[in-house]
Length: 310
Image (cartoon, rainbow, N blue to C red; front, side):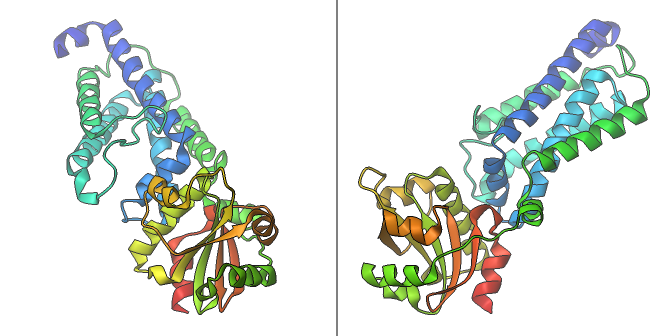
């Protein structure tokens, strides 16, 4: 096969286009569900959430650049071996993936819109390695000004992935990370719900709707942070709004894939007044008084740990 491809520049170019197309498709599909990819990396409990956000975008940038470079013939020999190295690294990761305790039914090779499980992803990587290996860097077309193209495409890819859907730390710097809570009305509503333990000591209070997909993402993010930083479940509580046709509260925890936490239910008009109609919201409270209120996307484990430890 190698000798046939080496002698046939058209076959080599076809393999370049095929491999590059898969890498570009993979990068685009990951970015279309970037928040889920962020969470998937964070679930490995190796990186903090901020680092996970930057890692996810850099991986997507690398895939996109490699796909473009191998099709265009930019530093073709270098690109070929970097692509093979990346595929080998992903393959080794998939072999040991169960060690990390993450979901193996979707490895996020193509995001959430085109799912592959662990075995399917392994097969996909082996097939891609078989496609890339025979590519002959000495035949086929190649762009001129390799260094310029390499620099411009790499820079554009990183800027695009960091700016179209910004990491939370950049989002915070641009737009701020806080929201507001009506503390007096919250305390009154808690007393009316019979959950006065919500007003005792330091509490992380999460305001959710049972039908809100971002509330489920927030619950997952907070659960990982709790496990990673050993935050006691007695310090984390939930407030839901009361709407009869929504998902039952018990189903919320199951669908979010998190253990149940102590919760209160507020009438919808009270909930919306307390939160200003924004959800999910995360409130750090001390003896029922708001200390800080955050949007879920800006929350990270360091903030939770520091608040509880103060």
